Image 1 (tube, rainbow, N blue to C red):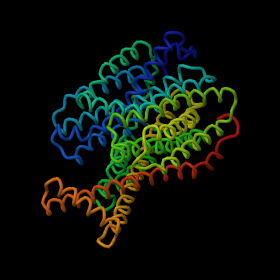
Image 2: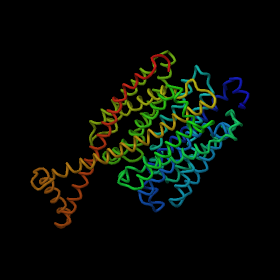
Image 3: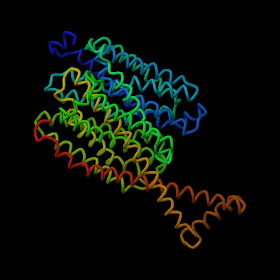
Image 4: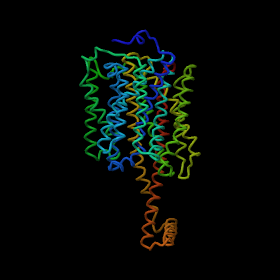
Amino acid sequence: MQESVSVMKNDYPVGIVRVIIVATCIIASLLQMIDSTVVNVSLRYIAGSVGASTTDVAWIITAYAISNVIIIPLSGMLSELFGSKRYFTFSILLFTFASFMCGNSTELWELVLWRFVQGLGGGALMTQSQVILAASYPPEKLGLASMIYGLGIAVGPALGPTLGGFITDNYSWHWIFFINVPLGLLAAFTSWLKVPNVKNPDLKSNIDWWGILFLAIGIGSLQYVLEDGNSKNWFDSKMIIMFSIIAAVGIITFIIVEMNASVPAVKIKLMKKNRNLALGVFFNFLIGALMYIAVYTFPLMAQINLGWTATLSGLSLMPGAIMSTIGLVFCQKMMDKGVNPRTLMISGFLCTFIFGAWMTFQSADSSFGGLFVPLLFRGLGMGLFMLPATMMAIEGLTGADLGQGAGFSNMAKQLGGAVGLALIGTHISDMQATCQSLLSSNITQYTGNSVGAFTRMFHLFQGMGLNADSAQMLCYKEFGYEVFKQSSLLSYLSSFRVLAVVSLIFLPFMLLLKKKKI
């Protein structure tokens, strides 16, 4: 193992060098997390621009997610193979170049291709940022390094829809990609300038090609199933069944290969040896699910039922992101003072429960001010249980194992988000269909309220100069739209109820944590 002089002597960077490294890692983390969600609010604009259906254009998100989740667990091995500085800098440049090409795309296939490439570059940014930050601080300051890393996770998912909505509403969707270019070039320059290089030259002759292949097949197929399963009605689709089988075979074969490989691409045995790493992976999976459920559901409710613009719905998430930052800082201070991490994680889950329970009492008349406080609880909850989970996955790990642990935790977070979105998307669809059926069954010619409302609306349209047939048709459309809005609102409120229940269900798992230091 050849390492730079600074790493061999455990000489941690200080002063302006550390500041530059920290700033580089924060920028890289934010770029990755923002681009995971920035496209979501712009899909219908992109669809119109490239001449694609809303179903086909969803591949812009799917392609990024698939390549992202494949590369994340491999980033530790790739960093050893090429050197941490070279791999990190190359990943930033690849992400930046792909962003530029996404912004210049004029056809759907071009955009999907470059989003896939963008995901290959972006997958390394979170993991390598975490590893570089952890290596830049002595072990006793790991909490501070993890807190800085957590800023990208906390702010990115909220900042993505805000930026995407603002840029799309005021400029062009192309700029949601172009905005990455100057930041990416800056991060690449500072990375090459100051990030230390750690490399394992012996790895070139021991690359685990079979492990890499089955990981790509298994995890990539699983991500596709999770991303597109709900839109294709899950196992009613032959495509979903086929990719589910491929995912199962690929993942099982990958595990067998890695357990028996002399130099595995992904050290699965590390989780067997390290209880805290296994717990960290589990809780990061859960964090990913809870985080993306809220980020997915709330903007939909705000835009469909409350009539907010994409910009306003994105901005409404920002106070929670700020509260997450405050929660991270508070959590780090408390852990430095010896407060049990289990206490902080329980507090985080309780805050998330309060958010979910509070949101179930909202209505179509809810205002920005009325939603401000529950969104603060969501952000605080994320800040409180994110730091202990992040530290669990990497504490005590050094060298190559540090990169492996970071890769495990980030893959778990990514897959957790995909599972959470898949399950909550299915729940929303099912609840909306159920509520729509129940509401429609109460609108009949024998129901006084519906007959009265229909009559008033009919006379209103006739007073506007419409004939009887046109007025009646418009009445039916208005009733149908109101039923849709009410049923969608009820389904979103139900999803927040699920979020609250899940937060409570997993509270007992806190007992698995050690009573003392993580």
